Length: 547
Image (tube, rainbow, N blue to C red):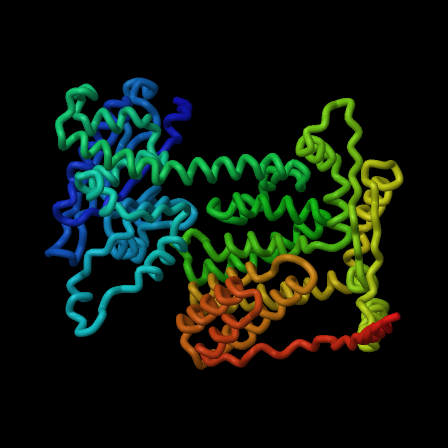
């Protein structure tokens, strides 16, 4: 007999792990969640695992909710699990920061999937109290772990909220869960469970305090999520003149790569395809496949969500689609850009809008599209001019993209993408990309964390001009000085690379980076040659003689 599957049969339960210390009402929170689900018409199940001794482990509560109402299941009942599976959780909610990172260390959080909500409050562990000096764990490092191993995170002081509301932490945790939108329940369903089904005007003092704590946490979590959604909407409006949205991932790539990377792979593949051509997009996929093979060797089960491949997919697409005059002309010549400008200035249908684009390409921009031998002559000529004290050569242009001639100029320049492959910059960028990818591959095969830190170094490549060049010099220096130091253990190299990268991103001047390099025993960055320009002093004005 042929069996047909319904949409409900393809759904999986929403999974949540709650971590609470003794006396914080974790059991009450679990009851509230199950009651909320049943009141809203959904099937739910919960189990608990008691902790051991005081502050050597929290009591954990595991909740599963099937996201399809029972009324739509046609009499069928979902099958739930009794215990959480590492890497398969949709959310972790914890009342203590170190307990949150403990669960992350156990592999419970998967960066592409897991929402983490944690209190910033600390309750010292037995090990921390035993240290003669200050044995407290660094709170900032704990928060960094939460950020690195979560799809979305919210860290708030649940203890302070509970004290201010006169309630226990469990009510605050419930408000944070409701504000996150994890479950398909309305706010009223959660509040109904807190009130115990009693009307608003008849709740007792304890329930009223719990509702205050619930409301405070709900707003603390839902407000930034609403703001982020608003920003994404604005960016979506502004991005209408950006490259076309990602096409459906080709079937061959969908089979070759795991589902955890499909979203970023589709975006990156579409961006590179729009930037150049199908062959260039195929090169992007081939490069990413090499990184996938390397990460699979270090993490065959994919327990870490293929984070190295995901980060490489993101930064590789941006680097391969580097900005040049052809790219700028293509973006400015898109028809949707004129529509966006008209919306921004609120022009009516009968209004005439004129758009003037100002360009100032220099010798480097023109040399980028020339063959290497000719490009070297152009750049050498410009350096010789600067050595004589003259300004770098540039060609100021004003193009009216509202006019036929101006738009035709932009479209003509944008059509020169075929010239990229013959240009000197294209060859230089591809060589640098290969050096970075080789380091990521080698690092991932040696140590997963080392490979991930090297993949994240792709963030250094941004901007254009001197900013872009500085980022590439920094990346190559980190690869050469830190990644290749085999005398240093791989985890230590990963930590050093991460610290140096964050220092470079935080301080454009490079002082923080130099300090980080020195701290980890790496050689300082080589000094880049800078032209010295001699300026003539204007003659002093001769004072006029009195009559």
